[in-house]
Image 1 (cartoon, one colour):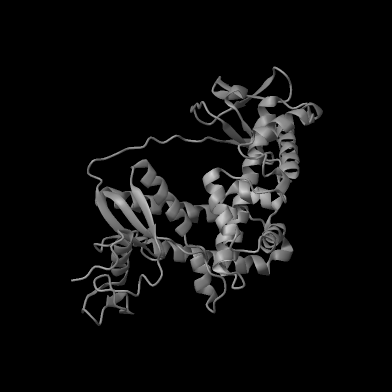
Image 2: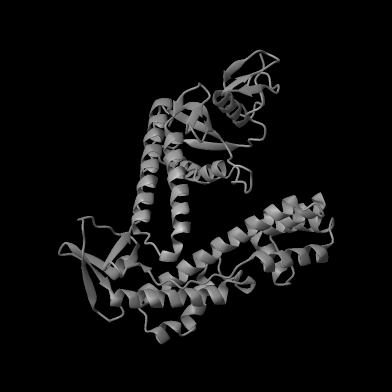
Length: 416
């Protein structure tokens, strides 16, 4: 375990070095695709200083570069949101700033106070937008927001590392993993007989004297001729999916989520009362994992049933908004915060890719208040939707799913 921890400690040091050196605006031109940063790291002498095998050194470098790219993506998403709600900016200024955030070369040039030089066609568009705004004002605004919201990464955890295929081999019902000692590998017995030929991630648990090996799994993509239906779905808290034909899947989801939310609230109260006695969290974590596993198992089961019965070629779904903070009913807010909608969306996306099903997101503004037949504003009561204009009545979720399908097909509202 100590030999593996030594590798993990060096892996952490390399990542922090890369974070510090390339995590700021000066590193923007070097992290895409990353070979410039790799060459600079080779010349830095850090690998020789740490006496670290190259097979771990370069994996740590590219892991850190991937983290930096993700952080820049989060920063840009934050800035896009702020630009959209800023009432002091004109539409032309917002358009210009969005252009800078979308075109990486322009974004990097502005932050580093360099001339913006782009491909010929894009340069023409940039010059048109530039003529409509005050460039100095816009550039100062963008730089100020980046300084405020962009975070340079750092890690203090040395709990794992990636390992390339040439740094391990399977034998003797276990695995031999390279360490910092040349031509010497340590043997670790495994609890199964699976063998892989890909990059692995070794997760260390020194307190328990064990490790976990995380493996990327390649999934084959299938195409079925009978998967051709166009299905609109509404995602709910109590019923997972409702289709435009009124079929329901995951009707017990609300019961499971409510039980989970009540248990979490009860545990939070117990912990706050006994915090001074330093209660252990091992039993809590095990029970929490059990609740989540039950939820996820049920979600996957019902999603498989949905795909098997509906046989969709295209699925239309509302683009889910982010959770809203605040509110007067803390109990309801807590329950919604534990809603597994992110997991539902992720699993649906994954299964659609595996089955070659197209997943289309539509804007959901007022989608549950409109009649799916005539477009008039209807009334909702006790889960029912009724339209005063055309007299159409159905389940609220069914009407929403029908509107989702209508919007997704781009036909607007269906008329008699």
